[in-house]
Length: 112
Length: 113
Image 1 (cartoon, rainbow over the protein chains, first blue to last red):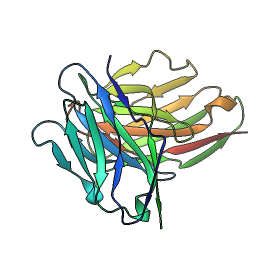
Image 2: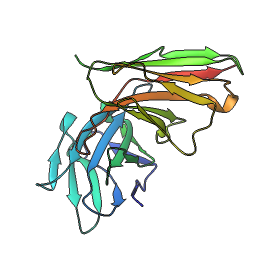
Image 3: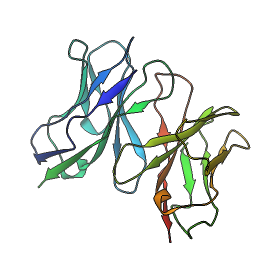
């Protein structure tokens, strides 16, 4: 069965510092991986995806993610965090169908 | 802009009083989903439509029903809301391709008195 894990409930980072939000997955076959962001009282917004090709994927708002097949990871990164990046982040995988499996979410808090 | 619209954004109902939440899309996506989300947890899939075909998740209570009269609209009916049904309800759409992301509405926050 497919699964995705976000091991950190919360990540704290100072503004201007690099940030990483972790995601690991367990699927059979090729994973289709996604990151979404959710601001308070809003729906989820698509940030980026990995389907195939270059392991470093660039997305919206300066975010990027690195796919690592050997470590079955797809960590979200940003070189310089902004206070406005504070939100809830969800990793998702679509292993065999269009129905995604979501991680439990990571709350990112960027301190001024 | 093409988008997913949910109405109302906030809904208050009484314990046991039926309520209907609505979702519309201009993306012409063939798949529409309803999720329940509580307290910053991961969205929980209730059911989805693939075109007109309804797909219920095994653990979705019978209290929750859905209708999709056409491609653009989808409704979530809660027949007898209980206190435990207070949550954010998210509608999403996608194409039936694994490589295409979901598009979410901004949700309806349901409160039960």
